Length: 214
Length: 263
Image (tube, rainbow over all chains, first blue to last red; front, side, top):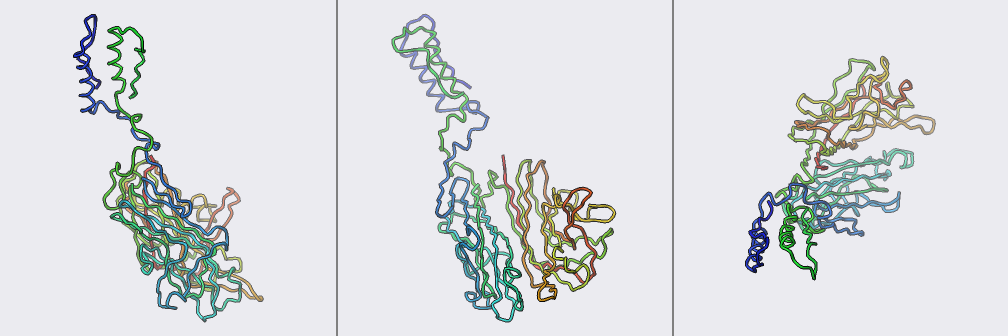
């Protein structure tokens, strides 16, 4: 609904009070808009929303819609990470964070967080007389507590005569989901795991996460 | 239009009554207020009606869920290459209720811990490295469980009457589980069934209709081997004849579901 101006001039003398009445009508409208005064079309486009902030070092984007990011190893053999039984209490299953795969997030709103990874893992037989297994988990905040189902990394068969590239190297993928019910600052996420293998070498890998505020 | 353009009266003009009236009525060109009244980057996170517990506010993220189980089931190999085949083995069933609108994006991920087992009987041979089991995703949208769109039940006639399985182009929601590693060295051939290992699968889909998802489940059958269907120029996997000595245990399952708005 448009403004109804109280004064419409014809040939009379211009009075200040008439002008003021029309100004008052404008002021009154601006103080009390009706639903018919606003468009029912889309009001907000992407350009109206505050641009996200991108950190090129951590490769994390923080925006209105959430926090998103990822890391990867680059090319084959260029940035290893690993699991080893020597940090797992040998066969006791003690879980340790897998280097490079973690992020520290400032989550400003409740969110749902999806984390996923892929890895090419070479696990050469370490001569222990057994075929070991690495177990990879998603974790939040405490790397000693893995979440969900373990993702298994096979060691090369202990009696294998082959190069581990042949029968000790596998591709693996996995994911983790967690709902965060309140603001969390300095919130850690990443991969953790334990192993009964001497070396689970992550020779090529990538991780990413999506934390949805909206 | 919500921009006021007052151009009738210029400095030095003699004001007429009609000019003056127009000067006021031009203000009404501001209505209705709309998109143009917002400045660039004027909307920030506090302006949005975020969901209090999980971020599932329906603006980008509609639903998300994750479930795990330890089914400890065994998939038995089919012993014939033509129907009737063994029923698919159910690995995990998850009751849900998700209201899916057109253009919603569905992302489903799963992870299985598996352990194939067998011996040196058919179909094991020196060229059998491609032997695999197939686990795929099904949903119940009101008429019982069926494979999700772009996925089939793996017993299609791909070259009737001799070959059954699925064309690769119809396998968009499945996981192939390698049955055995076969390699030769020092004049002998090794068949390695190995230890339990993990496999992974995913299905992405942009819905073209409204559906209510009542359940999600993973099922599997086998064994298959890659093949080329010359008559149709298709890559495919076909069911192979096997002894009953071959099977695949599935010990753990994790399934996750994400539903996002695209418009």
